[in-house]
Length: 213
Image 1 (cartoon, rainbow, N blue to C red):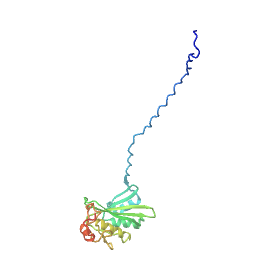
Image 2: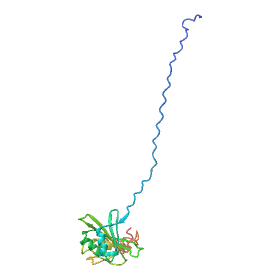
Image 3: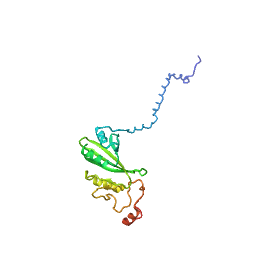
Image 4: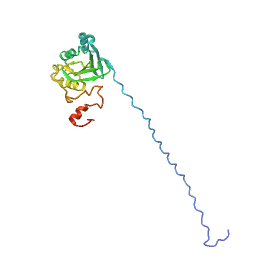
């Protein structure tokens, strides 16, 4: 081996350190799959079913075909009766069946029908905790017999029906408007009373403006 001058010795080769390959990074977790939104199922509509009870049998035995419908809808019992017997049916429900409380009295307008006005009496039996609706149809301009002699609370209810629908109640002790002025023209809950209709003359005369809208 040839002599190498001192101070010029070759540097030793660097020690080779085994390199351990880095562990592969874990794959990113897949994003959770969101199930496609589905429209909620439509709730089934309650069915109208016949109302079968001893009371209905009794009423039909007395009034026959004048009890046009006896049915239950959404758990509520109702009768559709001919207008010729509606007052007597209400009396029977009061005196014999315990429906002594008049919950409400209202009307519905069907302007295209031959008998366009439907009166609805809603009665309640406190003893049995039962409610029944009695419905009857009337012609335009036909008077309906008042029930204020039996239910004093019908006074304001009948006045409201008169005010909003123009239906007059024969035998009412004080039939006049209850919400609108006495000289107002028209009855706002009739279907032939326009949505934006008003008594322009009354508004101009009493409020001094062109429109109440």
